[in-house]
Length: 139
Image 1 (cartoon, rainbow, N blue to C red):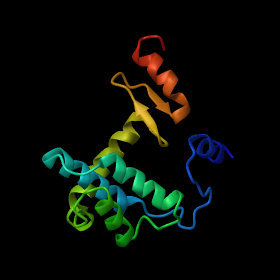
Image 2: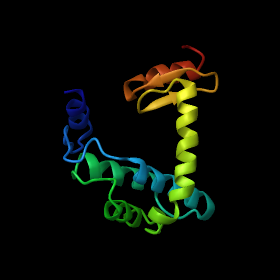
Image 3: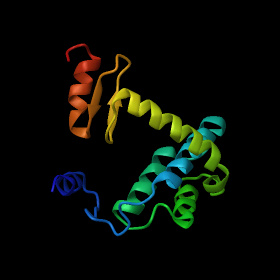
Image 4: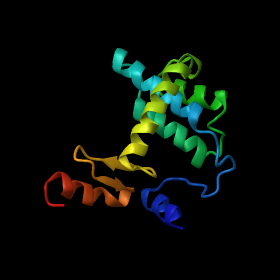
């Protein structure tokens, strides 16, 4: 119910139980990581647009974000080389693994999570005000 309320408030389409969930999000995550690296090196592509496309594919369009065709479509639509879906697998997997290890050590258990430099963990978009207070020294 909370997801549906949040989606309605934001004006976003949402299938609370999408056809392909849970799914293997690793391939699309690897592609996003590879695109992030490519964007840092070349300045090309729309990384937030890519993330939105992948999330929309799963939650709004009920596509399987583990499928190459879905990933390459999202990459191309965001101005990235669709070949990153394949060429970025190794780099993406390596960074993904490292990020996962760091998240476990930090105590992260869900998304979105925010970890501050002093190790405080804030989980959920409804904790952004608490995060802001903490960063301003009030929390």
